Length: 373
Image (cartoon, rainbow, N blue to C red):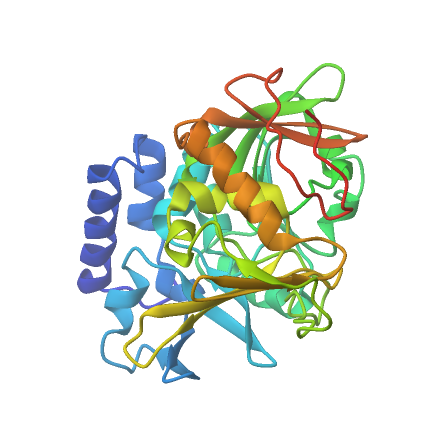
C-alpha cells in the first residue's frame, strides 16, 4: 500500500458507508465493501470551496479536510477561469447510480467522465480493474486519475478523448455509467453496450436507467435521486452557458408563478425537461432572501423575473415555457421523478410519464419546436 491510510480514515469510511446504508442509498454488500475499502482522500488531495465569492483550497493540512472528504457532499476538484470544471460527486448520488447498474460478477463496465478517478476505483473494486474502462475529455484529469488509481493498486484502461463519439475500438460493455451531464444523449455511445446491457446516464436533472433493446432503442425510467452533474464539455472549456445579457425584450407582464414555485426539486427536474440546457441565477437581497431570478440559453433567449414582474426575449420565451411546464406538473399531481422515463433512438429522444406511450407534452425545445405529444 503506497498511500497514507490511518485508523481515523478507515473509521470515517465505515461511518460514511453506514450513513449511506441507513439512508437507503447503499443496498448491496459488494458496493458497501467498495465504499469501506476505497480511500477517497487519495483521489481528492485538494478541493475548492467558495468563501465570500472567492475559491479557497483545502488539503490534508487544513482543519476539517478529512471530515469533508468522508462526508456525503460533492467536492469541487478543478477550477478553470473561475468556474468549477470537475468535482468528486456526492457519495449518495454515486452509489445510487452504481446500484442502478445492477452489476454482476464478471461484467465489463465502461465509464464516461473519469473525473477524480474515485468512482472508477469503486467500480474496479467491484468488478476488477481488468473489466473496467474509463474515458475522460480532459487530458490532465486523465493523467491524474490514472496515477491515483495506480497508487491504490488498480490499472484499468484509462483513455483520453471525447466519449460522445463512442469508445475507441470494438469494445462492448455489459454496463455503462456516465458521470457528466447530457442535454441530449449522444447515441454513438449506445454502440459500446451489448443488447440487454444497462446504461445509467444523467439526462437533464435526472439519472436515466436505460436498457439496450434488440432494435437498438434505449428505454427506461429515471432513478429516484436528483442529478446535478457538470455538463459535458470540450477540453479547455468550462462548459458554461454564456449569459447573453438582456437585449430587446418582448415586453413586461405579471408572472403567473413566483420564484418560490421553482424551489421544489420535483419541478426542477420537469423544468429541465422543458427548457433543456440553460444558465440560471437567483438574485438575493441583503438578508439572503430571493428577490429575482434570471435564466438564459445558448440561443440567446433570456428571462428576468423581479418581484412579480417578468421580462423575456430571444428566439424562445423561456418564462412562458416555465409557466406551462409548472401548470402541467401541478395538474398531474407533482409526479415523482422515478415515474418519468426516456426513450432514445438514432432519431432523437423523448420523455414520458408512467409508460412510453404517455409522452410528456412539454413545451419548449432548444430548437423552438413543440415536444412530441
